[in-house]
Length: 222
Image 1 (spheres, rainbow, N blue to C red):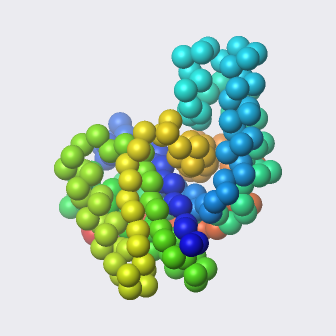
Image 2: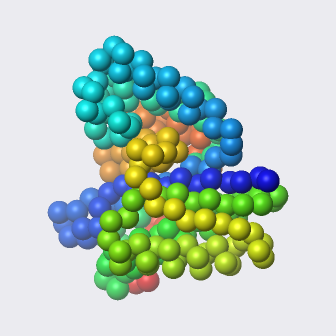
C-alpha cells in the first residue's frame, strides 16, 4: 500500500496586534517510507550525545529555534542533500491583511491549514492508497476540534472516495518528520519575517509551493 505522510508545523503567533509577528506560516513536508533521512538524523543525534556538543537535556529532539548555530548548520546541510526535492509546501499570511472575523485562532488556524492541504493534495500524484497527517500536539481542546473539523472537510472534498486517512497530534520529539517540518518552517518564516534568506537558500529546491494567501489587496475580510 502506498501511504503518504504529511508532517505539519506552524510559525509566527496568533497575536494580531502590533506586538505580534508580522507573518504566520504553515509548512508541510510530504514523505513516503522508507524514511532514509531518519537514519542520518539518528546517527547525528548520537554523535552529539557522545561528543557533548549539546547539553544532554537538549538532546531529546531537534528544534531549530533552540538548537545552537553549529547544529543548525549541520541540520540544514542534511536536509538540503537528503530530503526529497519538491516535498515541501507552505502558506504565508501577512497578518495585518486578515479581517477581524478570522482573527480568532479557532477560525484562523483551520482556514489556513485547509488552504495548505488543498495545495498539497492537488499536487500529489495519483495512486495514494492511504494518507497520514501528523501535527505537533495541539494543547487546547477547542482548537484541536476546529482543526480536525477543517481537515476532515478538506479531505472529504479532495480525496478519492473511501481513501483511508488518519489525523494525529503528537509531540514533535516523537517524529523526525515533525522536527524536519520545524526546520523548514523556521527557514521560510525567517525569510518573510526577518528578510534573512541564509537558511532558505539552502532548502529552496525542496519547496514545491510557497503561496502568500493575501498577496493582493490591503485587507481581506474572510
